[in-house]
Length: 414
Image 1: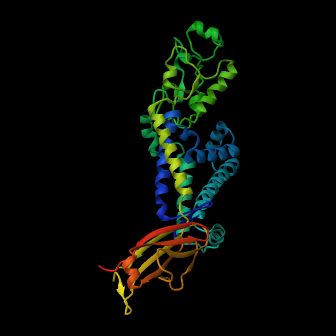
Image 2: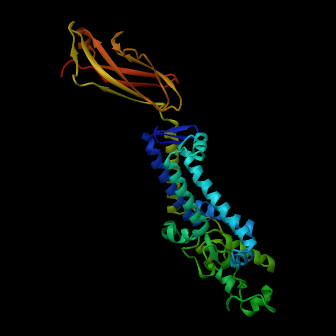
Image 3: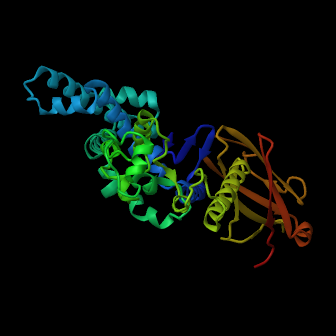
């Protein structure tokens, strides 16, 4: 839960505070490097398999397919008038479920910013804050537009990744490719008509294995022809690979006319099986940076103190000489509990005589999770000890067993 008013962010058992913003910076850096690392190895695999736009679009398409059937049937239904009972029921129910999925996406998002059971009740009783309704409305509309209307146009015209991903490609990068040598032969592709149905017959006529069925174009979500070469619109979803392999299976020919491969391997006279080429300075550099940042983030999280503290000496005045000749210094101690649970703290000192440290009624401080407490402390020394003691330590012990020692200075003159 992201508790913005309380400035606390809960990620499972981890409580994150605004002062931990450095963790977010590292996470963003790791996300960028991971994207570059994956792109250098397998092209736009992120777009085709992991991007939220792709996943939501696939979910919407699955709903449409489940209700309206295959593409020819969907086209037939779309041509019918709205007075048609079939179109009204099937298309109407499709759009209704799309809307409900969009609403559920938006509503579950706002639950991260409040206590979910309370927000659930307040939202449907009309008692939630206006921001909750506005955010839900905005995300519902944008989700519906992105997944139901725009779909892959988001990848082509809106997403910046498709524009700059080409600069991260290497000749060894795995991407969806059409094996032109095998598919075209000497005389180009040709339909599997009589006299050109076997590999031997097609080889004698100079034709390749591509039967020009066009199925790879039909299944492509962004509407490109992979046989024209690698294009920036391609999101590496692999649907053309599956479609082509289906045709190859029906013909009884070898799979892989369209496949994930590298330009280097395809340019060989006899291409070898496709494999990841990770032995490059770019890929190794991305991988090393990712490992180092991940290790540092884990270390920093696991070694974070359960509380923050600061001790500042009050300098107005720097010291006070009392009527009996003793000298008093005052200090302000600020404790912030970031352990994730309520804690108790004991403040002591080392290097001072007994009873020299005065904390008032705060010898033991109880602090709720995420809260801060300011304690006013004073140190009073008689003239003899004041002339001898210049430095001492504050010792803060948490009920969890964690202890910190913070040095302090005792002033007797300006």
